[in-house]
Length: 407
Image 1 (cartoon, rainbow, N blue to C red):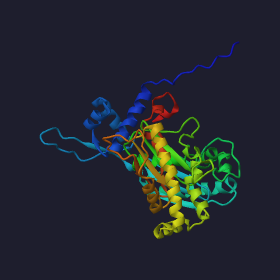
Image 2: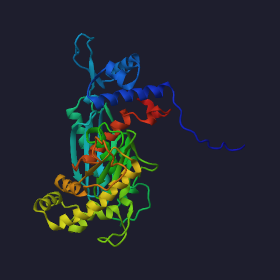
Image 3: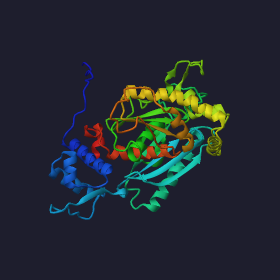
Image 4: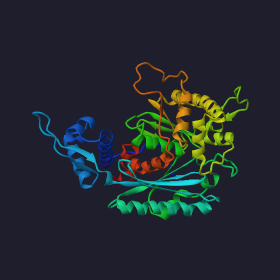
């Protein structure tokens, strides 16, 4: 018997898939606009009034939407606005970094309800896995104390850590968390928590946070340039986060840069402009608990060593913004960082003016470059936003005939 040859095709859909998509579209419209009537929703989504009414009724039954007081508009028919119920769903986000792990619990609209952090001991996952599981359990317990039905409405656990993923790594490579990369992290967390677990890199997590509650809210095409220990770009394309074939889309920090007068050797962007390069430049220990305070003091005093690094890093990041604009044609680029806000703002100011690019067009209503989140917790927030997005945001996969259509 001949083996059946593989057939290349897209996954089809059915009425169930269409219904799941329409439901997500309605939730997204309410998230973006705050509150809308059924007539508003029908006009905005181009669904029939009957379809809107059916979905709204289902969402009310599921505790995701609530009606507000009736509004009278002149002589017309009164209308009833609807809004999302924050306690309709919850998610937990986990950030794993080199020396610290942070966990956050959020509600359906992205409000942070609980957060906690712990230092990661030396030894990688052999000693760190239990610390992480204990931290998640602490956040989960605290969430259950303050939110009714938190366990019942917990939609998942999102995890963010530095990428890239799936590459052959050298355990001595300071830029990559090799031990964690080679550890069965998702399986361990799923078994230890009983939750559905998703993984993204830290730049993608920042983009997810910006899309939910930050500068990318309501924008369909944006790129978040994340300056952390390394450098990455979180890509929001056509309103969805784009991860690439292996979860490594946007690893711009690995882009090789040509030699310059200041830097005669060839090197990658993150070797020249990341926080790790700053720590090397200052001779600072990234595990120092007082490091953020030290950086703030250096900014306040105008320390020439820090100023010199900012000038050099800004030159490289200016090129990075131009490259992003040329390849992805976003509506805006958002600079995010795990560094303190004063330092990130100095870096942002030094990047300006931007290089000419296809984004430099008349009639722009959104700046080419914006300052985004500089909170050290933003990566954990984005990790928590990912399960909410996976469960409720419109996305092509929700239409397909997969188990993702359960909602």
